[in-house]
Length: 402
Image (cartoon, rainbow, N blue to C red; front, side):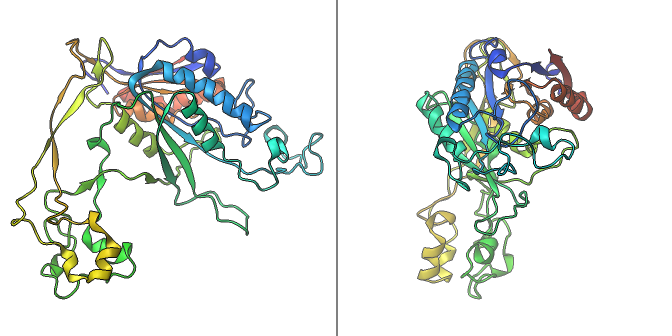
C-alpha cells in the first residue's frame, strides 16, 4: 500500500534469529506476530535450528533468550502474539532402533525422522509435554506480562489415529506485553454479536428454535433493532478468546504455515491502521464516540420475560439489552497522534523472528504495515520472498538481506 507516497517494505533477514535480533534497534517495532518451531516435531534441515533440543527445558531456555531480544526491540506500548503448539512423548517410529537407523527408506523419511522423546526429563510414553505453558510461564518469569491465552480452534484438524483420547483441534496464541498499558485497537477486532434467534435454539439447546408465541417481535427474528434481534445500535461485541480459523493449504515446501486470518487479527489489534509517528514510533490512536444508552423507559423490555425463570438463568444476564444491562454503540470519529512530536507518520512495523513461509509479512504488506522477518533457512527465505512478491507485490517491495 502506498501511504503518503511511500511503499510498504518487507525485509527478510537470513540468519540465526538471536543474532539478527541483536542488530535491531531498541523499541523500533510496534508488534510481533510469530510461531516458533514446535519442540520435537519437525526437522527443517537447517544448522542451528530450534525445536530439536534434547529436552523441553533446553527448548524453553532458548525461547526465553529469543523472546528477551524481542522484548527489547518491541516498543514499551507494543504487543507480541506467540503461536505455540504441543506434542506427545513417543518413540516416533524409533522404538526398535532409537539411535541407529530409520524404520523406512522412503525419500525424506530419514532426514525428517523425529527422535524418541520417551524418558526425556521423566516423560512417559503418551505424555502430553505441555510445551506452550512451559514457555508461557518461563516468559512470564523473565519479565513479560502474560495477558491472555487465545485458543486457535481448528475446524478441520489433522487426523490422528488415536482411540483413547480426543483428536487435537486447537493451539495456543499467547498475548504478551512489556507493560500493563499498551496499544490495542479494540474497535478493529470487534466481532459480530450473536442475534437472539441464534441464542434461542442453536446456542442454548433447551430454548425453542423460534421465539415464543407471545413474543411481540417473533416475526422479526434476527432483525436489527427488535427484541429478538441484535440490540438497537449495537451489532458488535468484544472479541472472544477462542478464534475459530480453518487452516489453509500452502503449495510450498515449508511444513507448517498458519492461515492469513490469524496474523491479520493480531496485526489489526496490535498496530494502528493510520501508522506511527515518524520520529518516535508512537502509533496513532483511534478516537471513538460512544453513544449513550436510551433512557430506561425508552429501551425495549428484557425479552427473557417470555422464556420463564429457568431459561432466563440458563441464558444469563450479559446477553441482553435490558434496564440493568444497557448496550452502547461506538463509532470511530477520527484519529489522533500518540505523542507530541508532530513529525508526520510512517507505517507500523511488524516483526516475525520465525518467518517460515512469510505469511506474517504477506498479511502485513496487504494491510499497509512494514515487516521484518527473520529466517534461518535461505531456501525458505527465497520461497517467502517470491510468495509475497507474487501475491502482494503491488502493495510494496520485498527484499532479502542475506
